[in-house]
Length: 116
Image 1: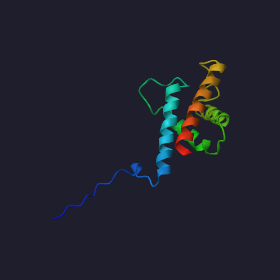
Image 2: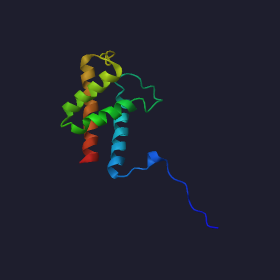
Image 3: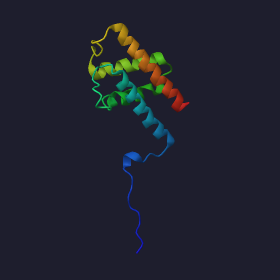
Image 4: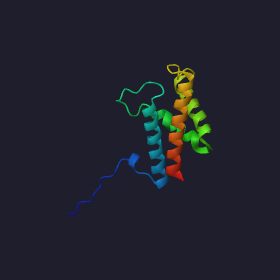
């Protein structure tokens, strides 16, 4: 009797196109960048998915984004929505702007690499 291989990968691993793979990779990259910069001081070197919800929101909103400055505004809006208006109070406003700029430039660079 011949045995058939009936094992299937989980549905979450089955993606129908390379574009879906790149989108998932981009979401992971955004999450890693946010984790690295840890703008809300919630990174305790344990939960690498701490910013996964924010990375999903940023990725969705940046599809029509035309430049790094627009992306910086999107990131600020996402963090304000997730953590409130005072999300960067533990750092000075100059440092908050620097964090936003660094994150936006790194995310934008990865978007350019993956999707252009």
